[in-house]
Amino acid sequence: MHRIKIDKKIIWALILFLAGAVLIAVIIYPTTKKIIAIRQEIIRERQELEKKLAMGLNAKKIKEEAEAVETVMPGLRQVYIKPGQELEFLNYLDGLAAKNNLVIDVKPDFTGKTLSPGITRLPVDLILSGKFESVLAALNELERRDTYFIIDVLSLTAQNDNSVAAAISGNIYRRENKITEAN
Image (tube, rainbow, N blue to C red):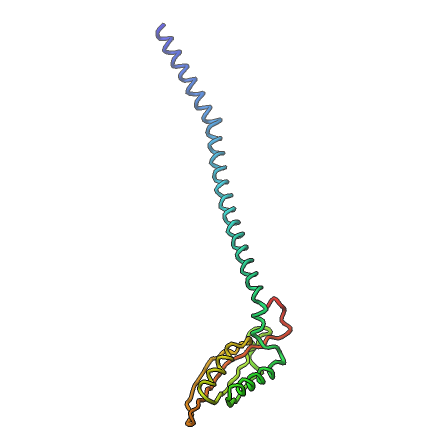
């Protein structure tokens, strides 16, 4: 009888073991596998959302920068001379020289070099002769002008009558009317 009790215990142990193995094989293992797959999908989705967030923040930053540029665009458009304003620029230089009691010699090249569609760089060489203070005042006023005159080379030479000659090589930029406002 004792042996039957041990056999029953062994049989119950085997039944419980088999039931546990079936439980693990049928329920726990597939559930664990699904949990791992869901976890990996969550990680992938989180990475996608982080990318989209970064792109959204980048788009917001680009939009803010574009709005900032739009506020200064009217001022930036003034740095160019328009076709036909070349003579006006030369008259400005003559007036600047007269205002500062200077002698001026201007050598413009209004054929220029095309930098991009509708934008042309126009070299201008000029010599301002007169008192040193007057030359500095004229250069200061020329640099403050809305229309850019970019000075590439400036050479000062003392004259024998207590005056100086400023040889200036620079560029102005012409913007063609056919350019769209986006440029």
